[in-house]
Image (tube, rainbow, N blue to C red; front, side, top):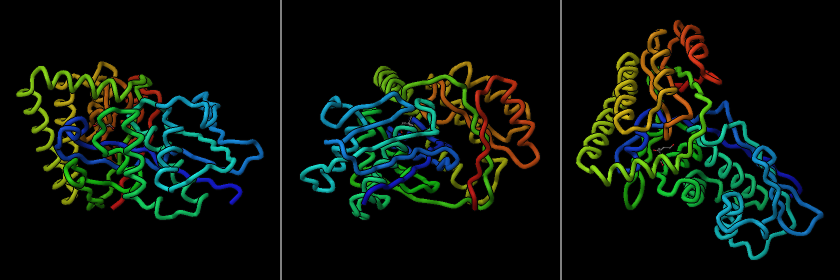
Length: 316
Ligand code: MEV
């Protein structure tokens, strides 16, 4: 095949980030408005050329560092596809998803590349959600060190999911809420490395395991209650639980002044609840709104310094 294009969505964590790394449940949803795109095309130049103009990447598979995440996608794909030798190719990646902002940009780029490669080599079994998620997870380890697997799961399935990291297999339950869930996603504009924040939480957990286990368990209990609220369509309860979850994330030290200001602004403007989303210390926050409150909350977030505010809906 001469040219193939594929995309993958971003993601938001509704509940349970960080605690999910420690075996507690979490809830995530796709952010379909923002996407990564990969184009695979035959080339007349020898070798595999890797281009990511938004990231300033212009390299080849042979020249890329051993831990280069884009090259790692190709290497993992080659292994899974039992590809003895690469044909001459150009792989180009674009993404609307800001990097290091808690929206799953790394996992989305990997998933888009894997989808495009699977289509190019006519290997559809490598593009089914479980396989795609497993391959993306291997690359996520390079970005994140000890990822829970929730990002690759929600992006590969492109459905809202309840997720729990466990052996021998993660618990993955796609769901549809009883009523639409409207969320504003607001960017602090501050970039924050998930790997660094996850490592810092691990250090704090090692230093004070009893306290951190209590915090993680409290987050897990919130997720269980949120699951019920989602199934019952109880948005008031759901919002309250989001705000409680934010308070526990503050306790974990992963919030920050800019995130707290946006959460407060959203609540004062009538949001049913608000919290940071993703690794924290920057990146994005989410606010639960209704048709009646969406505009006022959006304006309040912009006035409070949000760099970009998106409205997304989880459909029943
Ligand atoms: C990142 O989207 C969510 C974290 O819980 C890390 C992970 O689950 O791998 C912070």
